Length: 388
Ligand SMILES: [Zn+2]
Image 1 (cartoon, rainbow, N blue to C red):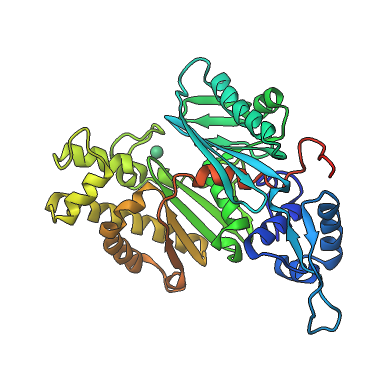
Image 2: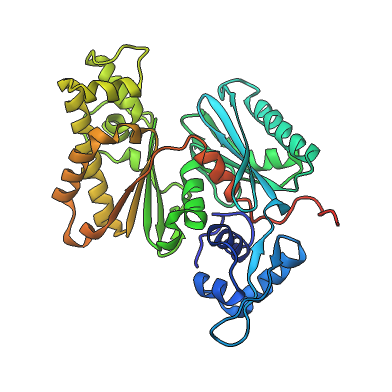
């Protein structure tokens, strides 16, 4: 398994072994080596360390066809935990996840990223979770923080976030210093993509795309087994694909980006301008309008589905993935977007792209925070582990 630098914290073999066991349950060393396409010697060395740390246990030997009984290795789910944080435009949400990736605690707080002391507020908020975990005697491996914006993978510095209004913020370094535990900061879509590659159904695909559509549109790419992030961590800005000459102004400063037409924000803006929705109504009302055959709503969603299908056909023709995962708040409207979307895809895909599987997933509000936790679960524990 190849992996780009900085995509997950720490030693990749360690992370991959832990994620595989979380996904598949107990496996022998030989099975782990085979599934991860790594040498038996590498797996033996890596699992020896994990056994010593108490993160794995050997189960009773099982008879094997090869003759020698095989010894399954299993995770010790409560032996490590990670805190995952999503910093969004108006709130911060978080989870605490166990080593087997199960979420054991979730929270959500209002947050104003424009406030002068926003980073101090964020630190205090995370500190409270770390303290609570320590009070509950949960061994914490680290904190993963997912932000909307461009993050330098090696340093966890947020280069720019239009949605948060933050520029050149050394977020990982500041949080690490204040919290005294390992902190890993990544772009929100990159975090979901890395977590999907390790823990999700996409773990078995060496080439997949993940399109997340909400207020903005992001694209995660796993190519030849490794997340692709571009030269400066800025790849995947699918929302800023130019599609309309002289279209509406985008948050990026340009005009006519895909995001100005297909994001949930764009759909709500257009539906309000057309009088389909009032200022107070939201996506559920747009869904209801299309369901009762309001022609304006139907045609708005037809157009969005068609534009998305066309844009995605371009990305599939370019990159040739096995699977494309579509997720985000927009999937609440999928009943109405699906047909024009698939029609546009069929029109524009080259023959080789027609085998690509499209996997549309219902949106999970906790996914970004849970993904942020998953990318640090394999990190070596922050504090010395207590014995017996
Ligand atoms: Zn743009």
